[in-house]
Amino acid sequence: MFINCFAEKVRDNKQLESRWAIMQETRVEYFRGKDFNSFIKNHPEVREILGPDKDLEVEDIVNTLLTKNLVIRCDRVMKTVRPGKKKLSSWPAHLEIHNEQVFTENDGFFAWMFLKRRTLWQTILSFVWPLFALAVCLFPVYPYQCKIVVLYSCAGALLCIVSILAVRAAIFGVLWVLLGKRVWFFPNINAEETTFRELVRFWPEKDEGDRPKWTSRLFYALVTVLVILLLRHHAPDEAARARYQKKVSNIIDDVLEWSPKLAISGIIEKHTGANMTEANNCTSTVGSNHAASSPEGKITDANPDTDSNGDTQADSDEMQDSDYADDTRTRSSEA
Image (cartoon, rainbow, N blue to C red; front, side):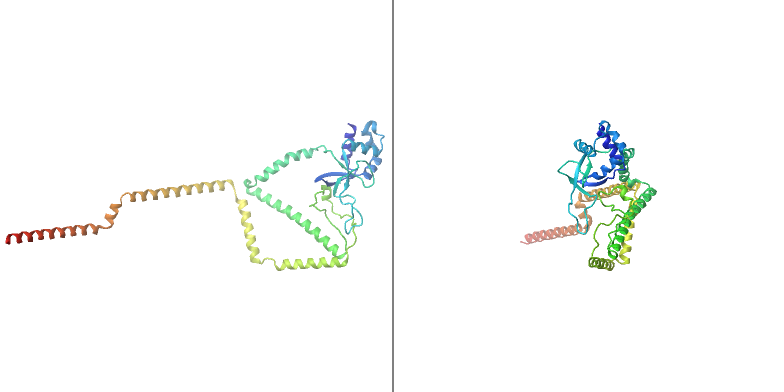
Protein backbone atom coordinates (compact mmCIF):
# COMPACT_ATOMS: atom_id res chain seq x y z
CA MET A 1 0.00 0.00 0.00
CA PHE A 2 2.75 2.45 0.94
CA ILE A 3 4.83 1.60 -2.11
CA ASN A 4 1.85 2.23 -4.44
CA CYS A 5 1.24 5.68 -2.96
CA PHE A 6 4.96 6.38 -3.16
CA ALA A 7 5.05 5.47 -6.85
CA GLU A 8 2.06 7.73 -7.64
CA LYS A 9 3.51 10.68 -5.74
CA VAL A 10 6.93 10.33 -7.33
CA ARG A 11 5.50 10.06 -10.82
CA ASP A 12 3.31 13.15 -10.33
CA ASN A 13 6.25 15.14 -8.98
CA LYS A 14 7.66 17.42 -11.67
CA GLN A 15 11.09 17.51 -10.02
CA LEU A 16 11.88 14.04 -11.32
CA GLU A 17 12.77 14.52 -14.95
CA SER A 18 11.12 12.05 -17.27
CA ARG A 19 10.51 11.61 -20.99
CA TRP A 20 8.27 9.64 -23.30
CA ALA A 21 9.48 6.90 -25.63
CA ILE A 22 8.22 3.98 -27.71
CA MET A 23 8.58 0.50 -26.20
CA GLN A 24 7.03 -2.43 -28.06
CA GLU A 25 4.77 -0.11 -30.08
CA THR A 26 3.51 1.55 -26.89
CA ARG A 27 4.25 5.03 -25.55
CA VAL A 28 5.74 4.86 -22.06
CA GLU A 29 7.02 7.44 -19.62
CA TYR A 30 10.46 6.66 -18.24
CA PHE A 31 13.16 8.13 -16.03
CA ARG A 32 16.88 7.55 -15.55
CA GLY A 33 18.40 5.80 -12.57
CA LYS A 34 20.81 8.63 -11.76
CA ASP A 35 18.00 11.17 -11.84
CA PHE A 36 15.94 9.07 -9.43
CA ASN A 37 18.89 8.80 -7.05
CA SER A 38 19.38 12.58 -7.08
CA PHE A 39 15.66 13.16 -6.62
CA ILE A 40 15.47 10.98 -3.49
CA LYS A 41 18.54 12.66 -1.99
CA ASN A 42 17.27 16.19 -2.67
CA HIS A 43 13.71 15.48 -1.48
CA PRO A 44 13.91 13.44 1.71
CA GLU A 45 10.28 14.26 2.54
CA VAL A 46 9.20 11.83 -0.17
CA ARG A 47 10.56 8.99 1.94
CA GLU A 48 7.92 9.68 4.59
CA ILE A 49 5.29 8.19 2.26
CA LEU A 50 6.96 4.79 2.61
CA GLY A 51 6.09 4.65 6.30
CA PRO A 52 8.11 1.92 8.02
CA ASP A 53 10.33 1.50 4.94
CA LYS A 54 11.44 5.12 4.80
CA ASP A 55 15.00 4.23 5.73
CA LEU A 56 15.54 1.97 2.73
CA GLU A 57 18.33 2.75 0.30
CA VAL A 58 17.57 4.03 -3.17
CA GLU A 59 18.57 0.72 -4.71
CA ASP A 60 16.21 -1.20 -2.39
CA ILE A 61 13.35 1.20 -3.15
CA VAL A 62 13.69 0.74 -6.90
CA ASN A 63 14.08 -3.03 -6.54
CA THR A 64 10.83 -3.05 -4.56
CA LEU A 65 9.14 -1.09 -7.37
CA LEU A 66 10.46 -3.65 -9.84
CA THR A 67 9.15 -6.53 -7.71
CA LYS A 68 5.68 -4.96 -7.54
CA ASN A 69 5.69 -4.41 -11.35
CA LEU A 70 5.27 -0.68 -10.84
CA VAL A 71 8.34 0.02 -12.99
CA ILE A 72 10.34 -1.99 -15.46
CA ARG A 73 13.96 -1.65 -16.46
CA CYS A 74 14.51 -0.78 -20.11
CA ASP A 75 17.42 -0.49 -22.47
CA ARG A 76 17.99 1.60 -25.56
CA VAL A 77 17.30 -0.06 -28.91
CA MET A 78 20.16 1.71 -30.74
CA LYS A 79 23.29 0.76 -28.81
CA THR A 80 25.75 2.16 -31.34
CA VAL A 81 26.53 5.77 -32.13
CA ARG A 82 24.80 6.96 -35.27
CA PRO A 83 26.89 8.44 -38.08
CA GLY A 84 27.60 12.10 -37.44
CA LYS A 85 27.11 11.80 -33.66
CA LYS A 86 29.79 11.84 -30.98
CA LYS A 87 27.89 9.87 -28.33
CA LEU A 88 24.65 8.10 -27.63
CA SER A 89 21.52 10.11 -26.94
CA SER A 90 20.86 10.90 -23.29
CA TRP A 91 17.15 10.27 -23.77
CA PRO A 92 16.55 7.56 -26.39
CA ALA A 93 13.26 7.63 -28.27
CA HIS A 94 12.94 3.84 -28.60
CA LEU A 95 13.36 1.36 -25.74
CA GLU A 96 13.20 -2.35 -25.14
CA ILE A 97 12.87 -4.49 -22.02
CA HIS A 98 16.18 -5.24 -20.29
CA ASN A 99 17.11 -8.80 -19.43
CA GLU A 100 18.25 -7.95 -15.86
CA GLN A 101 15.52 -6.34 -13.77
CA VAL A 102 17.72 -4.72 -11.12
CA PHE A 103 18.50 -1.11 -10.27
CA THR A 104 21.55 0.60 -11.73
CA GLU A 105 22.54 4.22 -12.11
CA ASN A 106 24.82 3.74 -15.08
CA ASP A 107 22.70 4.15 -18.19
CA GLY A 108 19.68 2.64 -16.47
CA PHE A 109 16.19 3.52 -17.76
CA PHE A 110 13.01 2.67 -15.88
CA ALA A 111 9.50 2.96 -17.33
CA TRP A 112 6.34 3.34 -15.28
CA MET A 113 4.01 0.36 -15.73
CA PHE A 114 0.83 1.64 -14.09
CA LEU A 115 -1.72 4.09 -15.41
CA LYS A 116 -1.77 7.51 -13.86
CA ARG A 117 -4.82 8.57 -11.95
CA ARG A 118 -7.21 10.55 -14.13
CA THR A 119 -7.26 14.25 -13.46
CA LEU A 120 -10.36 16.42 -13.65
CA TRP A 121 -9.39 17.78 -17.05
CA GLN A 122 -8.85 14.28 -18.43
CA THR A 123 -12.29 13.24 -17.21
CA ILE A 124 -13.88 16.28 -18.84
CA LEU A 125 -12.03 15.67 -22.09
CA SER A 126 -13.18 12.04 -22.15
CA PHE A 127 -16.76 13.36 -22.44
CA VAL A 128 -15.88 16.23 -24.77
CA TRP A 129 -14.15 14.14 -27.46
CA PRO A 130 -17.27 12.11 -28.42
CA LEU A 131 -19.26 15.35 -28.63
CA PHE A 132 -16.55 16.84 -30.80
CA ALA A 133 -16.66 13.83 -33.14
CA LEU A 134 -20.46 14.15 -33.36
CA ALA A 135 -20.14 17.87 -34.12
CA VAL A 136 -17.72 17.10 -36.96
CA CYS A 137 -20.17 14.60 -38.45
CA LEU A 138 -22.98 17.19 -38.29
CA PHE A 139 -20.98 19.85 -40.11
CA PRO A 140 -23.14 19.73 -43.31
CA VAL A 141 -26.28 20.80 -41.38
CA TYR A 142 -24.61 23.79 -39.70
CA PRO A 143 -25.85 27.28 -40.50
CA TYR A 144 -23.88 29.20 -43.09
CA GLN A 145 -22.17 31.47 -40.52
CA CYS A 146 -21.01 28.51 -38.43
CA LYS A 147 -19.60 26.81 -41.53
CA ILE A 148 -17.61 29.94 -42.33
CA VAL A 149 -16.14 30.04 -38.80
CA VAL A 150 -15.19 26.34 -38.87
CA LEU A 151 -13.70 26.63 -42.37
CA TYR A 152 -11.46 29.57 -41.57
CA SER A 153 -10.44 28.13 -38.20
CA CYS A 154 -9.33 24.83 -39.73
CA ALA A 155 -7.61 26.61 -42.61
CA GLY A 156 -5.77 28.87 -40.15
CA ALA A 157 -4.62 25.93 -38.02
CA LEU A 158 -3.42 24.02 -41.07
CA LEU A 159 -1.59 27.09 -42.38
CA CYS A 160 0.08 27.56 -38.99
CA ILE A 161 1.33 23.95 -38.90
CA VAL A 162 2.63 24.07 -42.47
CA SER A 163 4.31 27.44 -41.83
CA ILE A 164 6.07 26.14 -38.70
CA LEU A 165 7.38 23.10 -40.56
CA ALA A 166 8.51 25.21 -43.52
CA VAL A 167 10.27 27.83 -41.37
CA ARG A 168 11.86 25.09 -39.27
CA ALA A 169 13.23 23.31 -42.33
CA ALA A 170 14.41 26.56 -43.94
CA ILE A 171 16.32 27.69 -40.84
CA PHE A 172 17.91 24.27 -40.48
CA GLY A 173 18.94 24.17 -44.14
CA VAL A 174 20.47 27.66 -44.17
CA LEU A 175 22.45 27.18 -40.95
CA TRP A 176 23.57 23.71 -41.96
CA VAL A 177 24.85 24.86 -45.36
CA LEU A 178 26.49 28.09 -44.15
CA LEU A 179 27.77 27.14 -40.68
CA GLY A 180 27.59 23.35 -40.62
CA LYS A 181 25.41 23.43 -37.47
CA ARG A 182 22.38 21.25 -36.89
CA VAL A 183 19.97 23.69 -35.32
CA TRP A 184 16.28 22.80 -35.09
CA PHE A 185 14.12 25.68 -33.93
CA PHE A 186 10.70 24.52 -32.75
CA PRO A 187 10.16 20.86 -31.86
CA ASN A 188 9.29 18.18 -34.35
CA ILE A 189 5.50 18.09 -34.15
CA ASN A 190 5.42 14.92 -36.27
CA ALA A 191 7.36 12.86 -33.71
CA GLU A 192 5.35 10.31 -31.73
CA GLU A 193 7.25 10.87 -28.49
CA THR A 194 6.79 14.67 -28.45
CA THR A 195 5.02 15.99 -25.35
CA PHE A 196 3.07 19.20 -24.95
CA ARG A 197 5.91 20.72 -22.95
CA GLU A 198 8.25 20.07 -25.86
CA LEU A 199 5.76 21.51 -28.36
CA VAL A 200 5.97 24.96 -26.78
CA ARG A 201 9.77 24.91 -26.68
CA PHE A 202 11.36 27.43 -29.04
CA TRP A 203 15.10 27.35 -28.41
CA PRO A 204 17.02 24.47 -29.99
CA GLU A 205 18.84 21.73 -28.14
CA LYS A 206 22.61 21.44 -28.07
CA ASP A 207 24.15 20.03 -31.23
CA GLU A 208 26.01 16.82 -30.37
CA GLY A 209 27.08 15.82 -33.88
CA ASP A 210 30.24 16.39 -35.87
CA ARG A 211 30.46 19.25 -38.32
CA PRO A 212 29.68 18.01 -41.85
CA LYS A 213 32.18 18.41 -44.67
CA TRP A 214 31.95 21.43 -46.95
CA THR A 215 31.68 19.19 -50.01
CA SER A 216 28.49 17.54 -48.74
CA ARG A 217 27.03 20.90 -47.80
CA LEU A 218 27.79 22.30 -51.24
CA PHE A 219 26.31 19.24 -52.92
CA TYR A 220 23.01 19.47 -51.02
CA ALA A 221 22.86 23.23 -51.63
CA LEU A 222 23.17 22.67 -55.40
CA VAL A 223 20.54 19.93 -55.31
CA THR A 224 18.17 22.24 -53.47
CA VAL A 225 18.68 25.04 -56.00
CA LEU A 226 18.10 22.65 -58.90
CA VAL A 227 14.89 21.33 -57.36
CA ILE A 228 13.59 24.86 -56.82
CA LEU A 229 14.39 25.83 -60.42
CA LEU A 230 12.76 22.64 -61.72
CA LEU A 231 9.58 23.28 -59.75
CA ARG A 232 9.47 26.87 -60.93
CA HIS A 233 9.92 25.81 -64.55
CA HIS A 234 7.06 23.31 -64.38
CA ALA A 235 4.77 25.53 -62.35
CA PRO A 236 1.26 25.99 -63.85
CA ASP A 237 0.52 29.17 -65.78
CA GLU A 238 -2.01 31.84 -64.83
CA ALA A 239 -4.85 30.20 -66.79
CA ALA A 240 -4.31 26.82 -65.12
CA ARG A 241 -4.13 28.41 -61.68
CA ALA A 242 -7.32 30.37 -62.39
CA ARG A 243 -9.15 27.19 -63.47
CA TYR A 244 -7.98 25.31 -60.40
CA GLN A 245 -8.93 28.19 -58.11
CA LYS A 246 -12.38 28.40 -59.69
CA LYS A 247 -12.89 24.66 -59.32
CA VAL A 248 -11.88 24.71 -55.65
CA SER A 249 -14.05 27.77 -55.04
CA ASN A 250 -17.06 26.02 -56.58
CA ILE A 251 -16.51 22.96 -54.39
CA ILE A 252 -16.28 25.11 -51.26
CA ASP A 253 -19.40 27.06 -52.25
CA ASP A 254 -21.33 23.82 -52.77
CA VAL A 255 -20.33 22.59 -49.32
CA LEU A 256 -21.15 25.89 -47.62
CA GLU A 257 -24.47 26.46 -49.38
CA TRP A 258 -25.78 22.92 -48.91
CA SER A 259 -28.67 22.66 -46.47
CA PRO A 260 -31.27 20.01 -45.58
CA LYS A 261 -34.09 22.15 -47.05
CA LEU A 262 -32.37 22.32 -50.42
CA ALA A 263 -31.68 18.60 -50.34
CA ILE A 264 -35.32 17.77 -49.48
CA SER A 265 -36.67 20.14 -52.15
CA GLY A 266 -34.33 18.59 -54.72
CA ILE A 267 -35.55 15.09 -53.81
CA ILE A 268 -39.20 16.21 -54.10
CA GLU A 269 -38.60 17.81 -57.50
CA LYS A 270 -36.84 14.68 -58.67
CA HIS A 271 -39.75 12.46 -57.63
CA THR A 272 -42.28 14.89 -59.18
CA GLY A 273 -40.44 14.83 -62.51
CA ALA A 274 -40.30 11.04 -62.42
CA ASN A 275 -44.07 10.82 -61.79
CA MET A 276 -44.81 13.21 -64.69
CA THR A 277 -42.65 11.12 -67.00
CA GLU A 278 -44.47 7.95 -65.99
CA ALA A 279 -47.86 9.61 -66.62
CA ASN A 280 -46.80 10.71 -70.12
CA ASN A 281 -45.58 7.21 -70.89
CA CYS A 282 -48.91 5.72 -69.79
CA THR A 283 -50.90 8.16 -71.99
CA SER A 284 -48.80 7.30 -75.02
CA THR A 285 -49.25 3.58 -74.41
CA VAL A 286 -53.07 3.85 -74.17
CA GLY A 287 -53.24 5.85 -77.43
CA SER A 288 -51.15 3.33 -79.30
CA ASN A 289 -53.28 0.43 -78.03
CA HIS A 290 -56.51 2.16 -79.16
CA ALA A 291 -55.12 2.74 -82.63
CA ALA A 292 -53.99 -0.85 -82.98
CA SER A 293 -57.48 -2.23 -82.10
CA SER A 294 -59.06 -1.02 -85.47
CA PRO A 295 -56.61 -1.56 -88.32
CA GLU A 296 -59.31 -2.06 -91.02
CA GLY A 297 -60.84 1.29 -90.31
CA LYS A 298 -57.41 2.90 -90.64
CA ILE A 299 -56.85 1.19 -93.95
CA THR A 300 -60.30 2.14 -95.24
CA ASP A 301 -59.90 5.76 -94.22
CA ALA A 302 -56.40 5.99 -95.51
CA ASN A 303 -57.24 4.47 -98.98
CA PRO A 304 -60.79 5.59 -100.04
CA ASP A 305 -59.96 5.15 -103.75
CA THR A 306 -59.49 1.45 -103.28
CA ASP A 307 -63.23 0.80 -102.64
CA SER A 308 -64.36 2.92 -105.60
CA ASN A 309 -62.01 1.12 -107.95
CA GLY A 310 -63.27 -2.22 -106.71
CA ASP A 311 -66.94 -1.26 -107.37
CA THR A 312 -66.12 -0.04 -110.92
CA GLN A 313 -64.43 -3.34 -111.76
CA ALA A 314 -67.44 -5.32 -110.53
CA ASP A 315 -69.88 -3.26 -112.68
CA SER A 316 -67.81 -3.81 -115.81
CA ASP A 317 -67.77 -7.55 -115.19
CA GLU A 318 -71.59 -7.66 -114.86
CA MET A 319 -72.02 -5.72 -118.16
CA GLN A 320 -69.75 -8.14 -120.02
CA ASP A 321 -71.75 -11.11 -118.71
CA SER A 322 -75.06 -9.61 -119.85
CA ASP A 323 -73.69 -8.86 -123.35
CA TYR A 324 -72.44 -12.46 -123.65
CA ALA A 325 -75.88 -13.81 -122.71
CA ASP A 326 -77.65 -11.63 -125.31
CA ASP A 327 -75.31 -12.82 -128.08
CA THR A 328 -75.94 -16.43 -127.17
CA ARG A 329 -79.75 -16.07 -127.35
CA THR A 330 -79.54 -14.30 -130.75
CA ARG A 331 -77.47 -17.10 -132.27
CA SER A 332 -79.86 -19.81 -131.03
CA SER A 333 -82.96 -18.06 -132.52
CA GLU A 334 -81.31 -17.74 -135.93
CA ALA A 335 -80.47 -21.39 -135.94
